[in-house]
Amino acid sequence: MKLLVTGGAGFIGSNFVRHYLNAHKKCSIVNLDKLTYAGNLDNLKDVQSDPRYRFIKGDIADASLVESIVREGIDAIVNFAAETHVDRAIGHAGDFIMTDVYGAFVLLESARTHKVKKFIQISTDEVYGSIEKGSFRETDPLMPRNPYSASKAGADRLAYSYWATYTLPVVITRASNNFGPYQYPEKVIPLFVTNAVRDIPLPLYGDGMNIRDWLYVGDHCAAISFLIEAGVDGEVYNIGGGNEMPNVELTHFILDHLKKPRTLITQVKDRQGHDRRYSLNCDKLKKLGWRSRGDFHQALRETIDWYARNEWWWDKLKSGEYWEYYRKQYVERERE
Image (cartoon, rainbow, N blue to C red; front, top):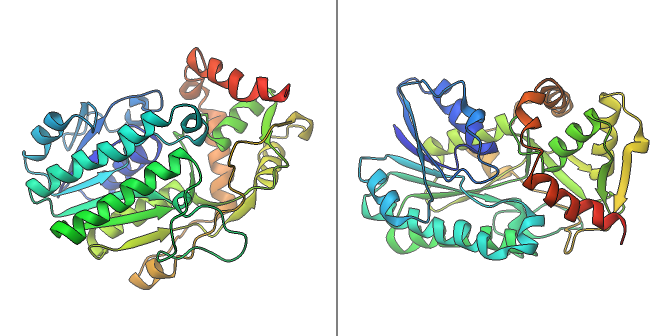
């Protein structure tokens, strides 16, 4: 199996590349990544010399580049490449449309032309919007409430249309919030852990009662690997961890584990259009034969410890543009 993994230098993509190489000794992977601020080749230092792995720097929206890669003989495409941070989407929606929607179109067109055997479109639970009670099923309407989730919903349905129209073997996954090593420290868990390590205030949105379901990235990667083989063409699969937790409780867990005072929490003005609760029903994936195997609290402790031990990885990321963005996003909001 020869895979094209897009966005493979990002958080979930890099964890998937490592997982797939370890699980499939006869595979080969081409990693296409633009290396935006969240793409980091340090994420894959341990596999960069593996002869089964090749990195190409480039944009999925570059049709000629994508064409040159896929025509070499790609069996499957796994599309992680996306702009992903809701806060950034609110201020720069155009970047999200170009990468998340147009980039997906370029990949799908090339996959159709060269008869790729499987196309996995990585979507998100955020395409459903917020849910007060119960859990979203794959057949529920999509109601995205911010430019990021709208761009992902667009790519999600575009991918489906290539199965319905051209019978391209597409599988779409919608996962809940991921956590684990190598996540860019703008996201809540690495942001709060790295701040706490240095006794910097933890900026908690609103009342902190927004609820997310947390999925360990290793379990997510295992589910995607499983669906490359077992996923039914044209189908959507929710991938959830079954670990719902309010943001304030998550914050307390991080601080308590690091033995840091809860007085480090600083409440900031809530995000625009902040969804209150995400929850996924994953019965469809379970019936196919896959289940998450991890212990959530243990995985969360191990993740916190990973960031605490690997300051070399995140220290250089939290500088320059990062702090300019951080100041606008959090420090100035404290004054509002």
